[in-house]
Amino acid sequence: MGYFHTRGLRGSTFEELINLTNEAYLRHRLAAIQKISTPITPVEFDKGKGVITLAYFGKESTVDYIGNVQGVPICFDAKETSLKSLPIQNIHEHQLRFMEAYAEGGAAAFILVHFTFCDEYYLVDFETIKSYCDGAGQGGRKSIPYSAMKKQYEIFREGEFLVHYLKALGCYLEELGI
Image 1 (cartoon, helix red, strand yellow):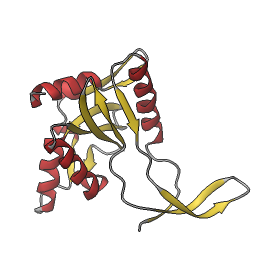
Image 2 (cartoon, rainbow, N blue to C red):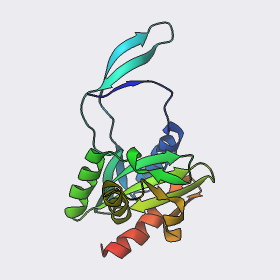
Image 3 (tube, helix red, strand yellow):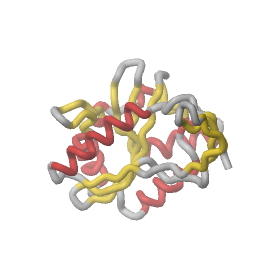
């Protein structure tokens, strides 16, 4: 079981933007997406501040989000990086296996990534993720470079849709033939 010391909620602002977007998608009947919580067991607790300071992960989780978009099942994870690449080490083996099983079942699996150095958001399709992960496992590049991001998968804010990934997802689904 993995232990962690809290260092703030890295990526929590990005996930909150996605959560607010998903709420708007649900209100507009565009998609029903659920945030999946990572199960933890607290070990140390700062009673004065009311916060958990040490905990361990109870079990491997899946991905951050699961749902459907107008009848199409999807699963995705949210990642944030200040680098000009997304480190492969940020994509856990159990997440990759889950996305692969989901994709093999006819669903769309992907990652939403926020590159903080340029404040841009992209959808990274499962095929790209798998290709780079396989390459890293064979001694290749250990990250997915910013230059590999597909312009048609860039994500923009649009009104109340703070991270409006459905347009990029539409392009991806079209490429998949779904």
